[in-house]
Image 1 (cartoon, helix red, strand yellow):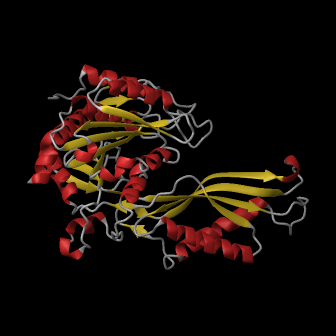
Image 2 (tube, rainbow, N blue to C red):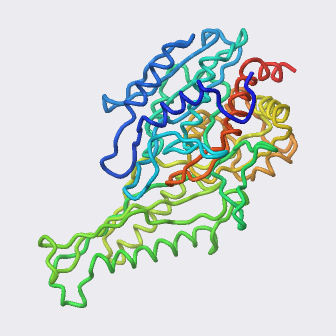
Image 3 (cartoon, rainbow, N blue to C red):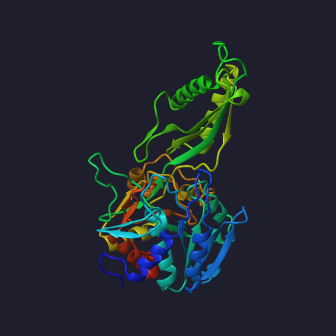
Length: 442
């Protein structure tokens, strides 16, 4: 059993090795890779009583790691997938933080410690120490690419045994933020379980205008045209939902955000020439019931209007987009987890994650064959009786994020509460060591 408010020497050493191995794979070139960390995790898992395999990525360099423990997966009564991403964002030149684990009071500091190397420690510990009960299989997937385009989770969905998974648990961060007084919203008492996340639709908007001399005021400049188009986009984005911004009680308002803009001028950048090309990456944050398909239709309709207005523009997809989701909390599999959380932590609270994560892709991919309503909020899903919701097929796979408390994700101040991580390690040991099956059979 684990005890106290501090990690054991073994856990601290393992987490230190994870944090000290940079694994940035980001949207800013040079993008980096996670190979060194994956090799280190592979080494750790090779010393465990588990079956370990690699899932090669299409680039021929990077790979996912899939570790299995317990019954053979095709013979198991119940299969749990632990999911984690191994990549982090890149250290910025101005940061004074380091790829080094340090303990300062009640916090553990280090780049990537919160998002999500503390979660990877939980998964490695499960492979090392959980005595999986008969009839159950625990699978841990250490996947690449979450911070860039989620190619790791997309590749995982191609794994032949993904169809055998009954439940996904991820020690991913909630990133729920703080209240207006600066108090952290996420809690261990009651324990927050993330049961939904917003979506994100990524696009590139390209604007091209004729080449000409810069003094001609009647000749459109790409910068001016881009600003006009962005206003047009926002107008149509609001109009698509009856003239008002669509707002969700859990995920807040939907919006369009410009992530990057670049302009190019003709003739290699002559000051006297107009800018002929503007390029920008757009992200559309969406909430239920909005879908990726709805946003793509809106973009196409807007583009057609722009073409009629003689403003040449083009939308192209950029990276991976994500549908929002809210987990069916009435699922018997999810309820078994909730009972275990309440039993260990003294209470459970269903909460929305405010950041997009791989779960948004994974939950949709694993349940794409199931028609489930998306218009309900978390509270509505919880309060409505079983008779008011469509029947839930037995093959529905809940995706629940149960992670450590921390702050500063994607910042130089990234940190995790050590006592919260200690409790999380023991919770996963207890859950996977028998309490989950106990509650499922009750």
